[in-house]
Each structure stands twice: as C-alpha cells, then as structure tokens.
Image (cartoon, rainbow over all chains, first blue to last red; front, side):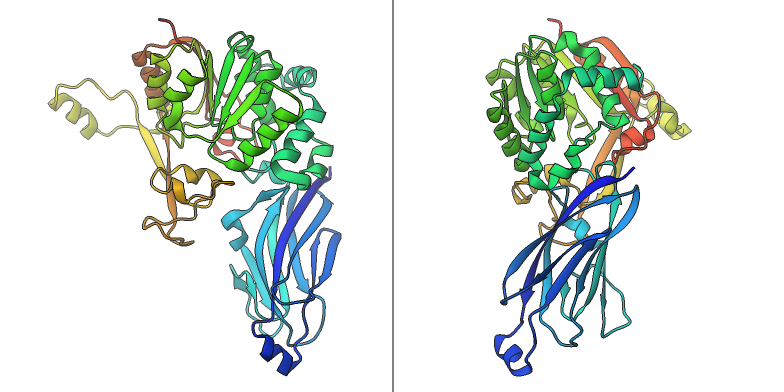
Length: 140
Length: 290
C-alpha cells in the first residue's frame, strides 16, 4: 500500500562573496530535490534567496531517501544551505543532521552537513509511513 | 479490549473526516493534505481511542474536560464527539495550540486550547471548572504525582489516565535493598522508577523546566545542552517510567477510587511510541470521591 508523503525543504543560495563570484564567474546553483519518483527543480537567481521545495510522493512502507542535487556540471558553483526540512508539515528539528553530503570533488561522505559548499548530492532517509515512526507527524 | 474492528466502527460513527482534515491543515499546513486524503487511524490509535474515550464515556458525556498535554488535539476532539460539554486542551507547543484554536473557531466547536505546562494544573482546574481530566501520555515527562495531588484537592470528579507502566518483574531487588529496609524498620519497597537519558532531539524535551524559555515556542524543540547552549553532541534530556505497583499504590494513597484499570494486551508496531510498541500502556479511570 502506498503512503502519500510530503516533504518540504527550505534552501538558501549563498554566493559566499559577491565579488569573488563575479571574478570567478561562479554560476548560481540550480537544485533538484527528489523523493521517490517525484521532484522539483529550482534555479536560484540571487545570493541569499531562499526557496521552499515541496515534493509529494506515493511511497511503499520502508526507508526512502530524500535527495538534493546540483543539476549543473560546473565544478565551481554557488553554495546552498539547507535551513529546514519538514515531513507532512512537521519540522524535523535535529533529525536533519542525520544526513549525508557527498561533494563531487571528494570521495568523502560527510555526515551532518547542512552547508553544501561544493556541488554534489545531499540525502536524508525518511521512514514511511512517517506518522508511525516520527513523533509529531500526523494523528498517531 | 474491543476488537480493532469494533473500535473502528465506533470511530467511524464519531470522527468526521472533514474535521480531521481541517485540524491537520490548521496544525501542519497544506503539507498534511496528501497524508489526510487517505487517513485511516492506525491500530495503536484505535487502541488508545478504545481505552481513553470509548470505555470512559460516562466520565466524558456532559462534562467539562481538561485534556492535559493535548498534543495534536485528537483526543480533545474525540472527547467532544463523545459528548463533552466543553473541552480545554493544554499543551506547551504553540504550533498545536494555534492550529487547534483556529480549527475550533472554524467549526464553532466548544473547545479551547492554551499554552501551558503540568505545573499549571491547579489553576486550570479552578479557572475552567473542570469535571474530568484526561491525562494521557504525560507520565514519562512530568512529575505527574503533583498533578494527581492537584486533581484530588479540586472539585474535578473524574481522571482518565494513560501511563507507560513498567512491569514489576522487570527489576529484582538485591538483598541490600531488603537489608536496608529491615535496618531502618521500613516496610519492603513497593515499587521503583527507571530513568532514561535521551538525545535532546525530541519535541517533548522542551518540557525541561530549566530551559523551557529557550525551547522553540512553536515545536517545543529544545536543542540545549546542560550549560544552556546549543550543542548537538552533548544535549541530553531524561525521561522516567514508574513501576505498575508503585503507580497503583500512589493512586490509592492519594485517595482516588479505581473504577477500572486495563493493561495493554498486545504490543503494537505501527507507532513511534516506545510504550505502545513495548506493551507498557496501562489505563485508569479514577473517581475523585469526596
């Protein structure tokens, strides 16, 4: 039986240094957030811009990865910071630190990073149905 | 226990799915819409419904009910649907309180919600002329004994209580305990409490009286270490659970009359709650006879 699962992430673009990005022609990041077979893509247009990604997917019981990825190949791009994650509308609090960041320029898998200084992939495991596994989610 | 099927039938007669969808939207926002579209109560929810509400309807119908630690307000709402004349829900987390008040106003329901803590019990009982207290699932986080004393001293008539009670056989006392009791002329121990240290990542850890004012007022998250600073690694909170016999003895000592008590028969797996999944729940219906 599939369970409708809605995840929202608030993400902020950070060009770190406007002058530096101008000198290095560092592009603003385009970010795609996916859950199951659903996703949302957003092209940031200025530093400091925040965007809320919201994805709803029908998922079978089990663990599923919420993924955030840079869509462009450029080695140097603006950074993004994950400000919050909520599941079915309930903020995850410290649970967002149970995540994995894999920058493309490194073989390292970094735990508990919310600031993505280099293009790469970030993921967090979401239990489904979430109301059975996360206190505060839904009428449980 | 009523069969889950029977509990579901009674649920269907009382719960309005439109109401529940509106409640969810007011609390969790539009991100809850998809979840609520196919909402079905889990077996754990139905078990709680049976033991908190259905079996205790005589203590709810026509009464002014205080739902202490009302969380998402589901049991406040179901108390209303089972005939409570007025329901007051109290909860530290603003996200729930604001959402539930908006929901009650939207449908003009006789329910009101307030931000508050266990230490507010005496004032709430007095100010809201409470007949019945619904106190379920707050025992691991609060000094609930103090609330029982407040209720006993009040004019409230009923207390519906759900506790996560540790089976007495979980702990064997060593001979040192009995030697101590003999040496002091004390009677034998009648129970125990167990304490558990958790990472302070839970919303309910915001109940810590030392740092209440630093908890997030909306969610109750309190990512605070013992020195009062944010520290993901050192942040801790402590919860506690009492033994079954101790709980029973305390209730008797305070002077409540036990109208009924039921132990959880089966462990449930469809919940994040440790008590339900470990089969620890015990429900009491207590009468506050004068």
